[in-house]
Length: 301
Image (cartoon, rainbow, N blue to C red; front, top):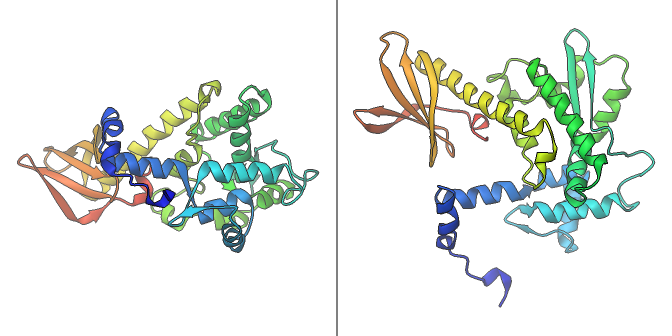
């Protein structure tokens, strides 16, 4: 039987999903999110142009399903690429260091992380968990990230070329890094750098062995809490709330207990993860707010 014709009914995921307290649809969605990459992400990992991805697909070296690639397969190609002379110049490329801190003129200290080096370190750690080289380097990166987020300092996730270029520049200015600033995040975070959600997604290592990193889990818990706080602050602005507190997580999103500023009345709000829709509990009935939406960039955690 052709692999593409093997039936995979969604209800076969029901038992697994139920054990995790979510629906089969949500489990499938998380499975896809955590194990696939789009063509842009693949191009970044392999350090190639998008046209090269098309060529790799045509030659049968890469396979996609509706534009999504299996992350493990891409990582295996990256290992082959790294060990060959085809794409990586071993004399000019090293996994270490993955990051460095530098002052930006008229702004202050900033942490730069190389997308390529960080990703390669994770791949190599996953293949050789007994190697202290990758453990030490990744733990050093997590330590630097922890220090930066505690000081509320910006973190940038940059290409290998920019990583080298920024490191060599004697004077680094704000305009040199503006192309890394997502315009959509300006509304959420007035400062430069990654938002809490963006950093959380980058650091999400769906691998075994993360307990070996002293700072990893602390950072993940801290960032998750900060993401919740960001949601609370957005809700406070939208509804002029005196207070908004995370109440619980439900199947489709998050529930918040809120206090109205003008009357002190307690209301409950729900935010749907998949759409950003807000629901208000009125007389024990959840009604959707048709005027407001939470930006999706705030919901991916």
